[in-house]
Length: 155
Image (cartoon, rainbow, N blue to C red; front, top):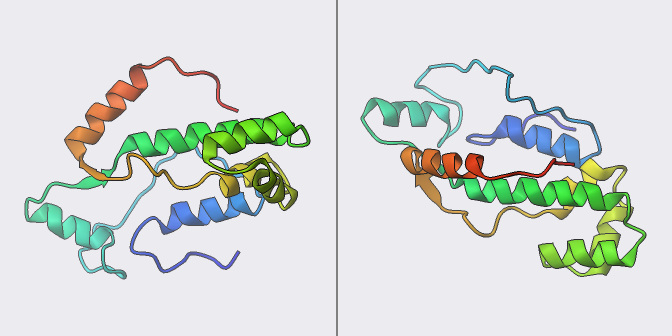
């Protein structure tokens, strides 16, 4: 897989996404704890060390709008469900329509995927709506609202 890319942040998440795109089974567990360094001299510009220095100076953190991730996760669940029925034109058309793709494009991507997880990671794009950065307070409000909604069982 090539290891971790030299990204300012999110290199661990990118590695897991790449593994899923390759067809490996990846378990994402919210109960897992991660320890990070508190050093202020980092290896990459824009990384955790820069964020910690900014917090030290009283700057408020910002992050991606959680609604974008929620959309992406729902779309990936739909893609995983669709993979088992990918030979059915209606399944391809429905998924393609929800992602702004043609049924032929959906089939072409599916042919290169060993399983539903790899398909979901490859076919679903990055969120196009709700892609702005928001403050921590706004993100928490959005998450509270998202968590209050009824949610179907994910695939």
